Amino acid sequence: MATSEEQQGGSEKAILVGVGLRGERPLLSINDSLRELALLAKTAGIEVVGEVKQILPKINSATFVGSGKIEEVLELLEYTGAEVVLFDDELSPRHQRELEKRFGEEVKVLDRSALILDIFAQHAKTREGALQVELAQYEYRLPRLTRLWTHLARQAGGSSRGGISGVGVRGPGETQLEVDRREIQKKIDKLKQELELVRQHRSRYRARRQDTGIPVIALVGYTNAGKSTLLNKLTGADVYAADQLFATLDPTTRRIELPSGRSVLLTDTVGFIQKLPPTLIAAFRATLEEIREADVILHVVDTTHSNCQQHIEAVEDTLAEIDVHSVPKILVWNKLDALEEDVPVIEMGEYADIVAVSAYTGEGIDELLEVIEQTLTHGMRPVTLCLPHTRGDLVAHLYDEAHVMERSDTEDGVMLAVQLPQKLYERYKAFIVN
Image (cartoon, rainbow, N blue to C red):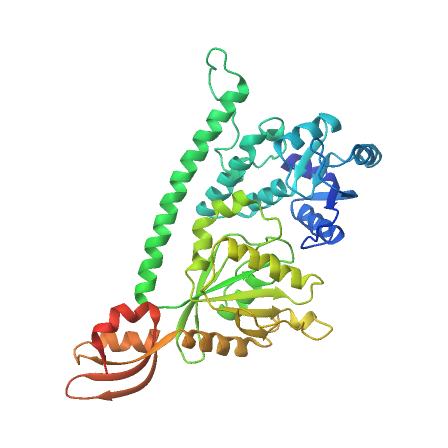
């Protein structure tokens, strides 16, 4: 991708290449997918100066597109002075090598996956985020070890460990490529060990949090759906929010109060997108587990986007990929303030409820909080507890983390009729009375 020196002298120029297969019905049309790719390029600091499209019966085994389209791209490169050819689909290592031969040494061949990985590298601010992106980048590059190392200046998620210079003396008969591959595999193994420690830490933290019984609400959505803006509106936080793809990457958690006074934790997660690189989903496993362990999922949708229905499908596909099935979901139509027509009609399906809001103006936020509370209540167990008079701490805890419907003080103890969150059932089951 463009180095800081290159960007100072003007952004790199790119030709976009999109391919459709005859008879297939992709999530987004070629035109819509290329528009999204252009936005990704803009986010990465690349100027799009042309595009080439082709419908094929099958992908060309050598060059991905047909020979005629290769010539068309070469003509565009010469005419526009572009230095980058950016494909809308992930290229195999063979495609990468063949295309680099056809376009020449001065042209960089990138695909959507490499571009997304580079954007994530720019936006990862925390140690965990940097590790996750670094691992995804190395696993993506390992089978492509040719000229790809010159393509991305921000090596390894911005980490000082990036690159493979200074590897050392090669053994007898060992090629530089073999040395590079061995060194990258070592880095991958080390990163996986570090991320496993992160995963274990998250797991312990999550277990402690579950012991408190504080419900967790996870925000998910297509990139640029307005999740960070909604988080800010609900919590008064100042999380960075911008009208660009993947403006925020690292997860943020804040406490909010529901209308009843009950506290919940609201967690923002990484935005999804169609054709999200599999290496990235695998690397972000620890972060994405937060979604799977949530009590309620808020699926935020940009209602104004022409492809909002397809965005919903892309997010649902990713949730299925990380095995999120049993968590109740609320669909949140966002950006009502910019909508010039009626909210789209959609079947409830797996959703517990559907709410329309404007995270920018605050319209519909009160209703959303009510719906969150109702959805949490549906997941509770109605029980009657008898707590010792000496356990005022437990009584106070239940008022904070459950829904106390009735209380009476008796000789035997404090009797509470409670809607008890499933997470607290084991902790309080010894106090349950008929």
